[in-house]
Image (cartoon, rainbow, N blue to C red; front, side):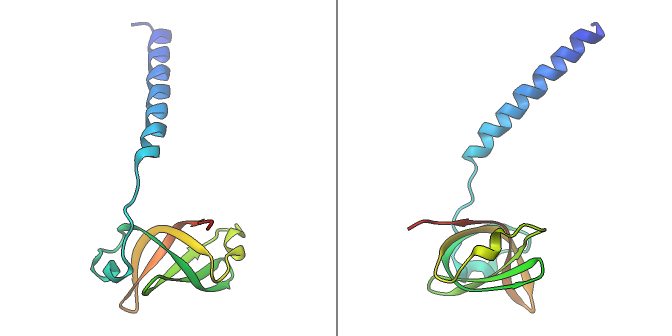
Length: 119
């Protein structure tokens, strides 16, 4: 095959692959996790929690949230320069997606994403 033909074929396959991944990512979801089950989940496993913000504390680029439903879960947010988490207030409904970690023997979630839920 000629070099320009291979280049066109590779470019076409790459574009089709990226479009396919985009549509596939829209269908992937993480199931809601109960706070009481965080202890039994392995570290680095991704979870999703929904609840009410009970407490917000910010130190430098780190924000600490406490989410409660019937129980409480501790959430750690690293803002990396973004001030979005400074606007979170107690009483707001949020959905948190992140990885389970242990701190002093207790489970906490290192959040990748926090979404406000209107309602």
